[in-house]
Image (tube, rainbow, N blue to C red; front, side, top):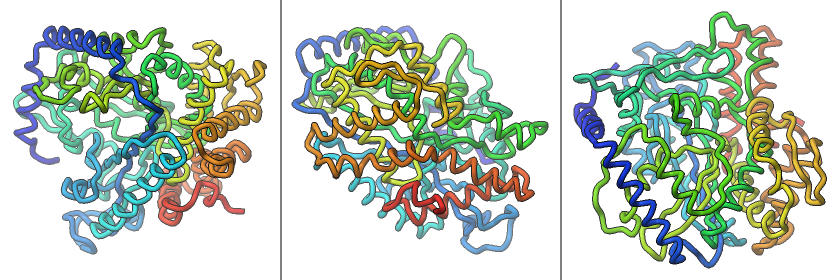
Length: 526
């Protein structure tokens, strides 16, 4: 345990002194400003634009010991010193590689430059991710660590348990600060505001409660962005994004296991395998950050108008009112609403943004997809998401009329069962189906058509979506791969405390070989 950061504690106190009623009034006024700009067409663009947020965690791969010196022999170490143990990322390293901090000290986030949705734009997205990752690997490798693209870490830092790492905190004059959390004031403030209490993970056979929101740092994701050409199309695009959320998540599940020490002592490995979910990122995010009467992380309702999208953000329960500094950017005219939007944690959410009037945009951020094994796997989801949001409205696809409750059920079925989930869909010819082959074929065919609509050749569109076609045809997702590795280890006589780290070690090794130029398919033995 380290001493509390006095400056951080003071900044948390400053946040807690913000007048919540004044904050609410400013957010409502900002909403009216945004709606006026919407009526004036300020948020309209000439074409659709795509972008991507990509989160990682760092591992030391066993080359570091307590004290921070490579190869040191003193200090406590874990039994498996060669495994991919979680590692805190030095802040100076984030600056060197051009990544941003995230919730945990072990996290790093990349945000790509927005690009037009056309053939060159999709290529640019893929090329930027690869280029920045290659540069990051070279720099972080010199530090004895590696960035991992994965939905949930399972092996804590050497000499620590996952429970200790996630619950360790200190107090300074009644301000609670998580030891291993970055200096993100809003997250620390959540543990200190009125009505704050404990934060627990609700997942099968998992027992974890903390005094802060640090358990949320277990998880990482990719978040495709789709800027609409016309802001008034946001409700229709939002509705379609909700309909495709379940099937796309079913193809992308990648978080079937927690760190072994977080499971209940009386839970057997067989029970954990049989009853554990394929995508635990969803229950972690929801259970840790939702409060009674404030479901901020949830599958959202459909939208009727673009104005309703703005009003929902303004009306969203405020957990911690954050002070907002004045500025001269275009979006500083609605800075409080932007601040409030930072905790509008819906699985699909509309965003109104732009540093200048000419850069103003309305977009949909798609948040269900966990971080993937390789760059090609991640870009496949960006391409599929963008292609679908081009194709489905152009062709008036009948899945738009799929009942909202069915779309929600699809989403949580995918959380629990992954690609084997019972999903419901309406095909392009209007036929209702629960046949997975028909669902994924219709989904990916329309994604391919949408990419061709914006200028990609047939072969290019097929190439970008090939990793998802392979999953649909084989039934193998990252979560299924992980479950298979753990089950095989258990069958060989290992216990869960050995089987999960062994799987994780193999995951990191395979990713080292394939991250930039491979796919999950390369991980499966012929």
